[in-house]
Amino acid sequence: MVEDEERPVFDRLDGVAIPAQSRETVGHDRAMEQLTSAHRAGRLHHARMISGPRGGGKSTLALSFAKHLFAHPAGQNAPERFDTTSIPEAIHGSVAQGSHKQLLHLTRPWDPKGERFKTQLSVDEIRRTVPFYGMTAGGGGYRVTIIDAADDMNASAANAVLKMLEEPPAKSIFFVLAHAPGSLLPTIRSRCRVLPLEPLSAGHITSILDTVVHDGAGEGGADAARLARGSVRRAIQLQQGDVLKAYSQFESLMAQPKPGEARDWVTVHTLADNLSKRGGEAAYDLFIELVLDWIAARIRENPNAPVAWMARWAELHGQAREAVRLANAYNLDRKQVLLNLFSDLFSAARS
Image 1: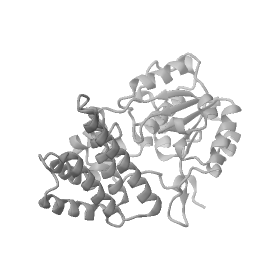
Image 2 (image 1 turned 60 degrees about the vertical axis):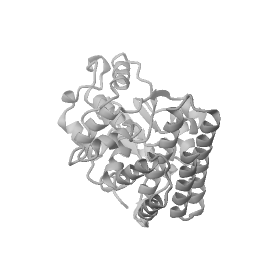
Image 3 (image 1 turned 180 degrees about the vertical axis):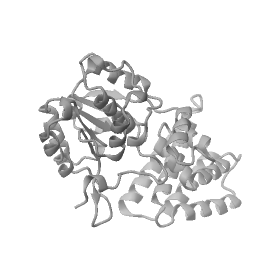
Image 4 (image 1 turned 90 degrees about the horizontal axis):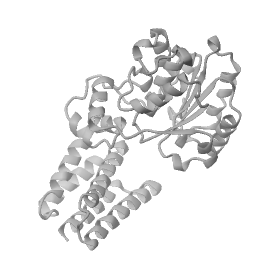
């Protein structure tokens, strides 16, 4: 059995510091102030649902506030604002290493036999709360459970979480992280106080890249931040592969007066070959997301365009999304999906 301290970190990206190692929360000062103020006033609710885009800082916020709680268990004596300098190094280090006895961070578990992470956050993971809350909290302080992310839970896990939220242990705080809170059980949502996070700005993302990526933001950092849609994770993925280069070629193709000439198709086939390589699923998915964003932005930025023109691009957006869904569901040829997408894009751009 893999011991807790040896468990691989879910969703970790090569060369990037994990959220538990972060000492600052960037771009979410208002959300952090809500938490610290509630703690200081003695009105800290036992369950908070932190919602926002994937990679937008939910884990970092929850982990940073957990450090604040551990450092200042008595709310009336706690600082009014989160201050990383007030966190003892021992607390920061134990949280960063995943060894703090009053913190349980639940994610999709590692499957040692398959050597990969499981596809769901299972009920067995949620049941790790039983021995966790069976222990005595150090110094009578809070015990914190982070469910990261609730979107990954199966039905059994969701029901187990609901039971805990209905009958929370004393001095317990649950952070339920959700990318799409509307997809969760209404009964779970109703037992949490929702704390929505705004998407991070490009400036915030660039600042975070400078601290969490071992080599800093680096080349392409500004473009990655611009296209990240408020997600640090997405910005890092854009930098780590060739997707930025592929998307730049896509933008150049679509900027032409009448895209779709024979020479354009040479570029398209090269792009499709590169993006549909075995093992390149993440790059393919990310490129598709960028193209869908481009279509949506084209509609949004032309509010006075003819209705027929708007309808054509909106239809294309829906068709592209459905084609990708079907291709993923039935393991269809990704290159053909891309070729069909470009054909439709060129046709719409020339009409």
